[in-house]
Amino acid sequence: MAQPTDGQNGSLRVEGAELSPDWIKQLQIWWDVHAFYPKEASTKNVSGTVKMHLWVRPDGVVWTGKVEQSSGSEILDEAAYEVFLRARLRPFPPGTPAPRADIYITMHYVLANRQAGNAPAPPKRPFTITSDQVQATAVDTMKQKICTGTLTEGYFFDSQRIPVEAIFYRAPDGTPWVKWTSYGGTVIQSQVTEIGTSAQWTGMAATGHREKPPRSRFAVWPVGDNHLSGRQIGWTGPPAAIDLFCK
Image 1 (cartoon, rainbow, N blue to C red):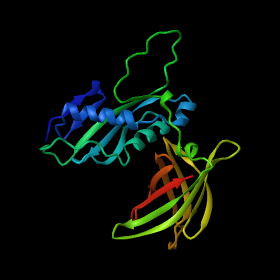
Image 2 (image 1 turned 135 degrees about the vertical axis):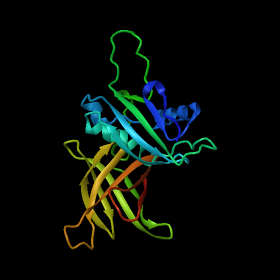
Image 3 (image 1 turned 180 degrees about the vertical axis):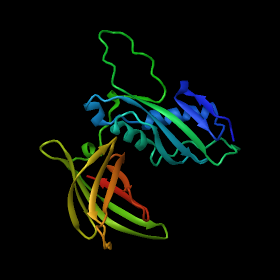
Image 4 (image 1 turned 90 degrees about the horizontal axis):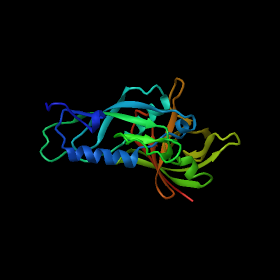
């Protein structure tokens, strides 16, 4: 097994594989593109530091991850977890003799610097995002638009495509909601949880259960102009992918 390597001024530790400085640099670039500061945390002036443990395959896919050290804020911990969920990083350099790498990243969520006058801002630490980089959520970018598409359940060789529709809106008190139509025209109105740019909500109860049936839960996030991608979350059955176009 490769010796642990430290980099990025103590914000990163790699075990299980010898990854080049260029790979580490590309990881920082990936973070700078994909990281987000949760809107709720920015509004509430919440900041903190989260340490994540990622298991990364040689093809660059983040196989799984967990919060190794909490920031003390559930909002920031979820943001740190969410940013690497489904992530595909740069593949390992050719010839890297390792089945995976254990990567420990310390992520800094910092409130925007509001200095008086023209005093220069302090240098930015690696794997840092500030609250002035808050991105619009799926609710805001698609609000009141009619988003239609499919929910594809099952594996490629045995899947079914279900027509679905989502209309996001905000109630008079500002809370986000979705009107979700699926499964043969069943319509529900569900309150949305906003995590980063994603919108998550609870759908109808699953069928075929004698005991109290579990309820479906979905998440979508913007992947382009008027385009949302997503999946069913917290689900142990076959994968379910969501693809929506809004107008």
